[in-house]
Length: 79
Image 1 (cartoon, rainbow, N blue to C red):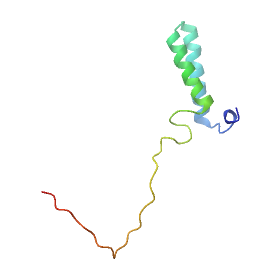
Image 2 (cartoon, one colour; image 1 turned 30 degrees about the vertical axis):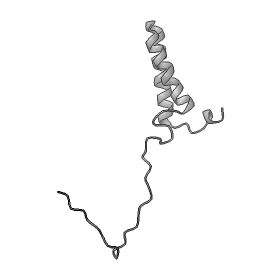
Image 3 (tube, rainbow, N blue to C red; image 1 turned 180 degrees about the horizontal axis):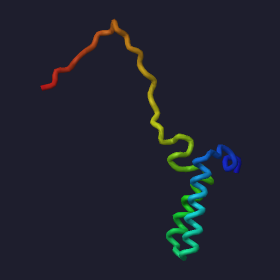
Image 4 (cartoon, rainbow, N blue to C red; image 1 turned 180 degrees about the vertical axis):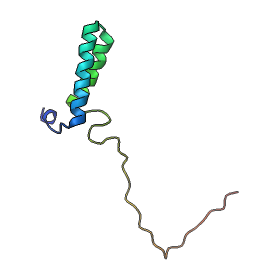
């Protein structure tokens, strides 16, 4: 419950509004598939899940290894 009220930015509100719009259109057109998809798209921003939630799509980088100019470099010959 605590996470539901935190970190509401523009994209999260926009995703919620679009999900609610899809639900309303599904009800208006009597289409259960649109209502279901709208429900899914509405629950994603409410619970802050999905690809754009908290930068979960960003790759995790390893620490860079420092370059030592005095270190010998070994090469393999490709045939």
